[in-house]
Image: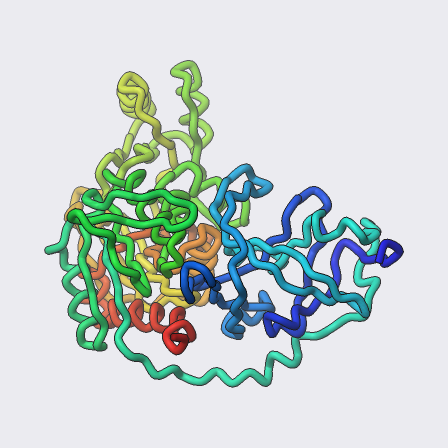
Length: 455
């Protein structure tokens, strides 16, 4: 096979996985091959462990999903091109490109936001010749055959669901429990900080009250800002155990870091108010100028619910607040003040790839923060297609499946203020009249449906 030539992108099939067509990218810079996998779950015995997962072959048809299974040959820590390390399941299967078929090892990971569902690394390319400036040197396949896949609604038994929270009496938690139980699911409310982790590559576990937690079909992370680091570690452990988490640890981390989130949104051309960040006190004057001068909004990077957000109405006031923040060694961003918004913004509640509910939030008289926890009020609202599309895109690029996207209406069009990975349900449900908790629960069902039928 040493004279067999392929381009930097090709069509491939994977007979043992039931994948008849997949567009792949060859990458000699990557050591291992990686395949997109959703809803990863272990099955079988310790001596004969297999992994079950879903693959959406076509990035333009994410609703078309193929159920795959393969024997687990290993579990390894793999470092991606951006330097992030991840513990992945390794499988061995056959790949067919053109007339050639051979066995390769593949690591399973979430590549939902990548252009290609699979990267073919150099270990799988050792006996091939890759022509880096050529595409599709072998016969092309097609995603057309996937259109024949019937999208049947599944029949569910009981799901076992865990809710991670530090506030079990919170309205949102009560609603999740109420709705889940009404849909015949089993729910455990787990205190995030009381979890402790057995980080074992062969058998990762989460312990609680002196015992290992059972397997859960799904986890709903409601991670408070004060326990973000530890909460992410617990979510990451659930992911390593093959449990479906509606928001991954990485996505929660990206959304919680306001500066990183803004930079990710900028990279994907999502409109936002002008924002600036600096460290040195010598840059205060320029920092204020970058966001259009006063008035301007100053936000602590670890602020939540409107706390740690200040409106500086003059340059002098802005300099004083910036000096105070810098004196406390507190990280913050400076953002332009949108006067025409009149103290109002939109909360768009995104579940999957849909805005399931929205509301207009308005600041109390004499205030500029519209957060309900800060005294703002909510009212029903019709959002535009542009606002809906921006909310979905913002949630998607941050890797979130469930989010609250805050959008402000400006003279230049809608702009994203913030994306929340644990949005509250009380305001949005009471204002919109929509059962958002049920929408989230149905989304969970949809994403674990194929796994429930495998025993």
